[in-house]
Length: 394
Image 1: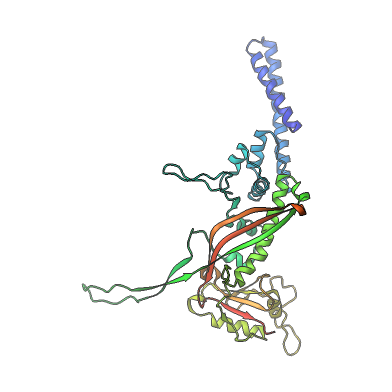
Image 2 (image 1 turned 135 degrees about the vertical axis):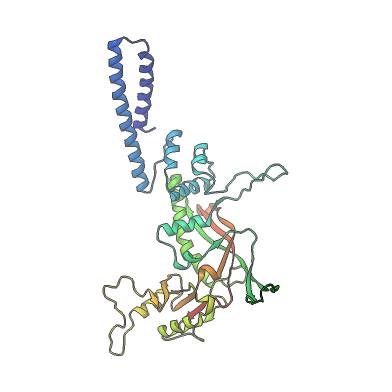
């Protein structure tokens, strides 16, 4: 136990003793007891303030010290950030440890739906699934957003979480409003409905962990696993969501079936971007962005005219090219070199998480390595004609 907490407990015990003594003390002793109580109370308040300051300093350093005393654990865990709670949770569950009652109360069920024992459902009792550590994908994406590490395309994808939804109904067309004479009966509007079939597949990342890393504290080990998940999601998953083949149990990316900005590829990037914008028409133009690979954005920014002068201001320009005409441009490092995508990702690219992000383990004993597999089963597909894909000619 923390020495300061030990001293606080001693003070509380002594103050209780003085309170009992106060009932039978004479006038002189009452004055002495009251003075002692004031001194003890001042010392107790000072020690508690120091403990709180130490806890805040630990949080700011990224490695909170979780005390063993249940009351102290309750307070420290309750004041952890969202990321720190997830790290502690993953660190414990990934090594087969159970949460204490204090941790269950403070961590709550918002971060996990994990249970170690499967319970079948009955007419009167809900069942309980046991499936490793389950973390809301939205929660992980919020962490990346908070830390400014989220890919622009991933940031704009609207992840649904509707169990079993793989066919997305949408209205293709409808009859227009009709004029009618006063008092006459009007005609009903007719609507034509279409169906966007999403392609199911796994997004997965594997994190090999040596026994040396597993020897870390629960919090530090959980932080190691979460950091690896965050990095891989932002790199590997986004590439799959962009370029997914849509075959062989693989999700369908937003460039699959997209309209080519320039048939056969382009050589002049600015011309290709302009052609791509013009090809993005009607309702698909509304809210659209240009997502460009780093080299594409650089080629536009550092373009020179026939006299060798920069076409655009490049000195003291901290924002680069922010738009082409009215269409906002953002650099996505997960796009292949020479590629760009134009479209409204939030509205016209559907991604539905069928199973939440989960962390499972696979022990390779002969190597002294434990693999932590983070995966999500989801379904995705873009609307036909909603996206323009440009690729530089080889």
